[in-house]
Length: 612
Image: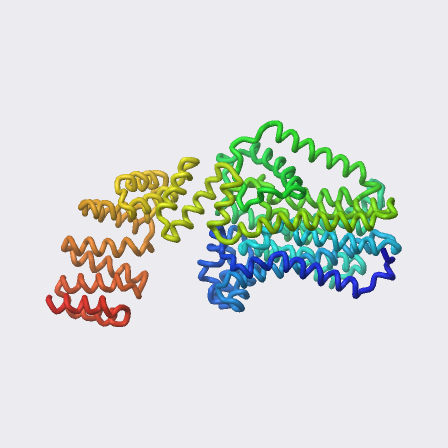
């Protein structure tokens, strides 16, 4: 390997370009094969999020700052989606391409950051080896299958964007420590704030920067317990206080937002169970770094964790921690990399549980950098002892890259669409009831009613849910299974008395069986549960019309038109009720409106008015 003076800038640029193109090439099938949105946050964040569909509008820009479109505030991520809309429209391929480019850029930034560490820690004569190891680690980051979830899932744009600002802030911090001044400090702060505005998980960055002070920056020297070093450690801690305050504020806002929307109650998942799951998850993340088999988007929360598994996982974590502390004077990179991994996973390890997952591959996008750091500097330490180490490292890198690329290549096609992905999920996990619900919803959207009913019934055998029962009742009603549908709808309302669609479908059952008074009551309850529930206004208008209560029918149709002024059904029903009530002038007005909306229905109303 050449020495530092023999590693020209052109070679660094060539390596960076190669890494960028390797990351892009790895994921280009996602664009070429037209991967779709996934009905798991993609629909909520992008596909059906009308706030961003107009691109950069004043309303959208203000809405993004409110932080009510996702579990946590992420205004910069919303702006990124708006830019995609401006460039590509509501096109998943364009949005996938943006994700891929972000990942490729993150790969290059990681490479540059590792080079900055090399320059701080490796003798000039060995810098060439450090450059090669940095490139190998960045390539591993680019192609590792654990990254698939963050790159291919459009809803994970926040992870990619926040990591970009994280790495930029790390590079800026190295630049700041080279020549400390207020301007450079503000640049680091700005990049940190931009990271927080992309995804609040960046709250751990100040602690990681403090780790960097120990190694590789060596702003504190060993032994750390000497008075001079303790004072220096205090000064460095004070330096981080503004950033820590930003983290505390952002973390508090995020906690309240998550608690309001999807925080799992202690009564459902006890603290003891969360702690046990957190310990096992740490061990599983380490395992999946080496053997990334059966990866999936949604790992179900275990009903029971065997005592041996918790004990073994705890022993592994404790052993690595003790080894890292013991090697601190000689190999500080081991402790720094391990604390990076453990610390950056802490906000998402599940102690404050949000969502139904026990763990998630996307959570490792930044934490695994700590593992790469350990692997890289262990390789450099080994290369110092062996004359032919560089050649062996090249062969190992080639083997490992092919090994992980193969896993990634097999996993990518699973993300083609919702049906493909979650069919795979239920194949590699057990009792994954959220996956069955998502498959049922997807089949229902596609009008595959029989398939949707089957998925919902499997879900209900595993657990109970008011929304699933209401959806199942609706589908059974559509298929003509009235009594079975009624049972599920009544049970859904027993679980949750604020389900307008359940009341509405019960109203349809009573209407079809001739029980008009009960149908009216159900439609009214649907409107009480949700005053914006359009369907029940129309149904109520129709049934009042059939009962000859024309004034009540007119009022119901007026309510429907206030919600949807272009509804052909509502205007036709109103015109019909007006005509039957003898209000011909008002009925003709509805006829003229219908002429602009639907000529066929307008002519039908015309004949009825003429007869009256």
